[in-house]
Length: 140
Image 1 (tube, one colour):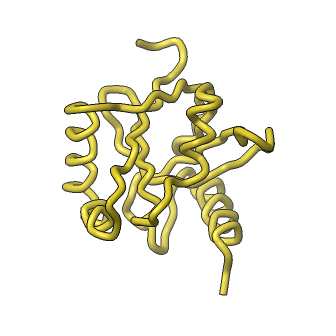
Image 2 (tube, one colour):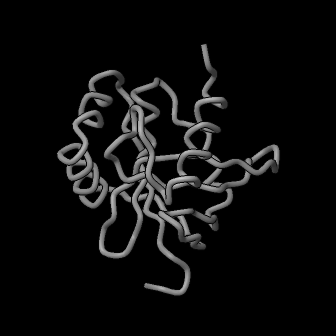
Image 3 (cartoon, helix red, strand yellow):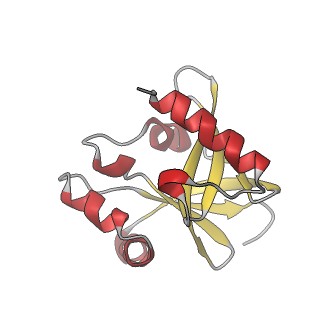
């Protein structure tokens, strides 16, 4: 049985070998690679994540497939919001900010409509998934 670290490494390799396209359980989804720094460890991490493009911004969702706790990357972005992403064959510097209120709800509804698994994830837990907007640096 593979660990999440093994799974992520396989997806990252596939992403980079295929210009941002991946198969398996992420097939057909837009995927980016999030480079972030551990809030406590200072260690560098890379996570493949499904995203939503919204008016030049990249939106990611801390669903953790419906797990009871927020994923580690969510905490890391709050501590260190200036990060880098790989989208397709591009690498971009972005600033992470959590969407709130009606903006958060609008973005999650769009993602759930486009990728129904996200609606299913909400049924697995009582927590509200943080929605993080990644704004490319140098654009408004």
